[in-house]
Image (cartoon, rainbow over all chains, first blue to last red; front, side, top):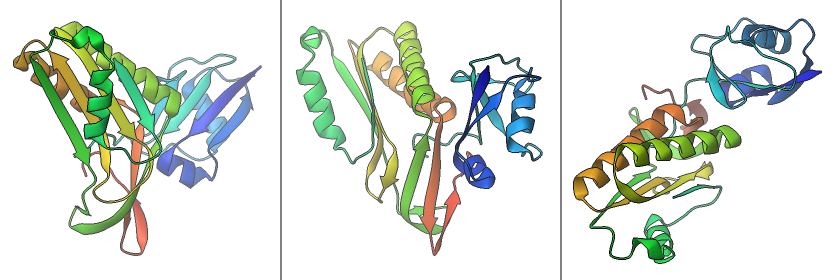
Length: 78
Length: 143
């Protein structure tokens, strides 16, 4: 009964961890996952994904999900 | 169709030759090949760039690159697509990304290639951190 949490780039540095596992008891949304694991207010422009799909902070999560948090993406080339 | 994420430096021109030679289904079918190669500059936002680290979220990157290539092949009549993207430590002059599209006609090949690189930039989960001066900075989408 757990949710895997992953952090990337500047969010990973800020929190000092790249991943976490939390008990899903009492967790219903992406925001709940952030609050339980990060324990700081969400930064501006925070993006999230549930099971590798972009998700809003209000999206529902459930047992076994992988939830990721990261800043805006900057791939490719300018 | 092939999507490859590489931790080490690659030669995009060799990748194109190697890939095309392994695709007999292309023979006689394509009249146009368009290629985009993105390369790391030694300057950005007015500062000298010594190196860059490219971080990514591997399973999500693969999933979204596959989807973008599928979308391109649904929108334009293209024969094949090769995408190679680096991650890890890069030096100036290192290729970052290669998009090659094979099609019967040039217009479809140009448009599909442009679609893949533009969508990749906004949807694939990569993050750039540049080494500038004595420190490092995260690149923002506006950068």
